[in-house]
Length: 222
Ligand code: ATP
Image 1 (tube, helix red, strand yellow):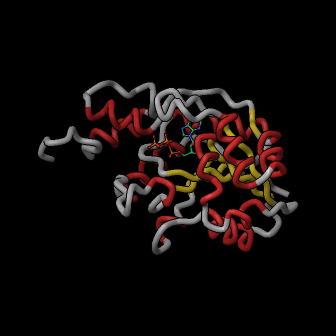
Image 2 (image 1 turned 90 degrees about the vertical axis):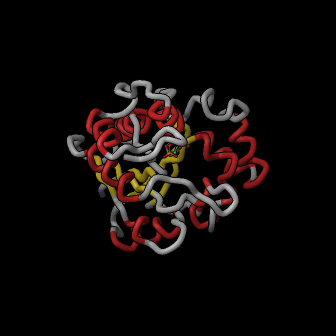
């Protein structure tokens, strides 16, 4: 039976933090493949009704460039073609229907734990099945929200989803390296005309420059 890791996100843009932890997770879990699944409109990143992500076509193009030479990494764009917001539960259902004999493990960044209980059909995502599991990727939070830590994320899971789920998550934390890179930082650095070449793959950096993504506010696009 093959084993596929599912890694969802906005990927605005994909960066080396994503790639390094996925690669390590694949080794640790002895998985065959990593599917990177860009979200069309991340329901978890809405501010009011507004989601200010870069158009899906750009995020998808950057993902494809980032993985084109990485064996066992594939981009699955299905959520971009779905009407409305993309829900992980729907994606899991579809993948399981399409690949009934594949084992899937959903990779969750630890920064997603505090709000995980609000995900649509969270109990379906959690339902333990022999063909599906969850693994948690540690993450440094300094440049995002310093009030979130792995333990506060697990505490939120305990509070909202109960001690059994929290215990399961705690056991599922993978010893992946803590890479202090975020897409927010990459976007800000581009806006501030700072280098990003060790943060994203060269082809992604070239794409950002060519398409003038993340322009400095107030600067007219040429
Ligand atoms: P943003 O800064 O825009 O919020 P991001 O860097 O968190 O973006 P996403 O596309 O939102 O990137 O993240 C996709 C997944 O990757 C999430 O599960 C997130 O927790 C995880 N992730 C992102 N960066 C890292 C990192 N440096 N280390 C570990 N996990 C990460």
